[in-house]
Length: 339
Length: 288
Image (cartoon, rainbow over all chains, first blue to last red; front, side):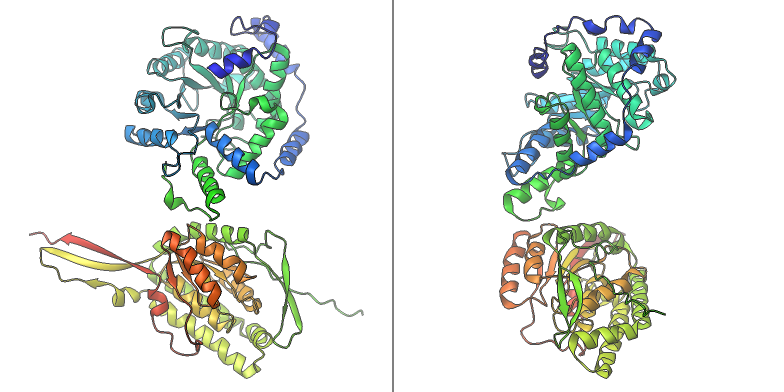
């Protein structure tokens, strides 16, 4: 992606392979990975919760709120990941992604739509030339319980169908049992399956988002370790959740991941994006995340290239708030499409 | 032994089955008809109105799909609970209206009877407003009534209990949910009524009661795109005109304020129920 290429020039390190130069030897064995990940400073749980809660109390009003709403809309990954998804539903969602509010052309389009691999082709056709990206979940989403071959094939299928972005899940079982090298190699293999830059399927490789499923990682320390593990293995984005597990995205978890991408840039120069997903339903929530990004990683991350909100119901609330600000009357869901 | 400290009641709002304070933190002093201080009541803001509409919308699918029989039972239950608190309501009506205890007793009794009367209508309103229509073709043509949706109600300032019950009951008995702006001058019986509603099997959010200034809150409800109808019974002339203009934006059903003073003790008729009903007509082939 163009945004990322520019961002990569921010630091002075140069990306040569999936493993970044300063950490070349970290992934050489499970022992070195474990030593590195467990050598990361522990997370102060109470402090992280308190900081996230404190940043959530910022009051964003009037013009700042209007700006935040438009920014949030442009960061939405409009998602449908149901067993009952049909091509028709995906096409309807794509239409909404391009023109979130058909009555108001000033509403920006969303960043991407996120679908299952078999519906990627439908979404690609529906979004052709619109600038909205197509993201596909892959690697035996949402549980990730399958062989590496199946996961790589799943990814290759989605990439071949034209997906611009791949949302993969990590093997939480392997991570929790301490088999970090397995997780690392899986991410690296899926990254390879996304295609090389300038490779066969277009100018750029598909963008890789790595879903940590923080709701299953049990501790904040694990979230920090999983974030670093994913970044070391070549992730372009780290994403909180599949949306299928409770709790999904929370502010403190996103705070820890934002700290990780900030520190990663300081140490390697590579800029990684963050995507909280699941459970973000209201404009108020979305604005809290934007404040968190600005105060943790910095304003550089306040772009759809580096921060996304994975959501389905959030968009309607953003549109209703936008309409409330424009007309001065409370909006109703009867006047917006259901996704 | 020292004298026992008075335990005073904090009057709050009634939203979604809970009793929150106003989001704004405001309150105002409520006085009796003689000007004596009675209590502080919450002064609801537009955001409380917004939350109340959200609660009413959330409660609508469940309440409107409950059987009319069930809704009638629940309304009757409200009447039972009200009867059980008769003494408390009599005292509040005396304070609020300055009437004698005897007259207040009659008003409370009338409020209980009014609930029982409307409870009986729950499964009968379809019989007077629905119909089998004669059509020139091989079809059954049936019209049935359905609730309008979320109804905003500006309660009358006179008749703090009987008037209030007489505007709420006809709205909810047919399956609507409502947001009520209580009488600004005498809001205390409305919150005590909310305690009755909260303990009588009425699902949370079916009735939401806001106390405060109708002039401040009602226009927000009238302009709200997720409110389907507004009852302006308690609005003064200027407010009613303003609300009706705002209500035009999403074609709300509007019940205008009465031209004459309403006698709440008189037979209410069915007009208040039928004002917030939609007619659905179905054509069904007769077959061979």
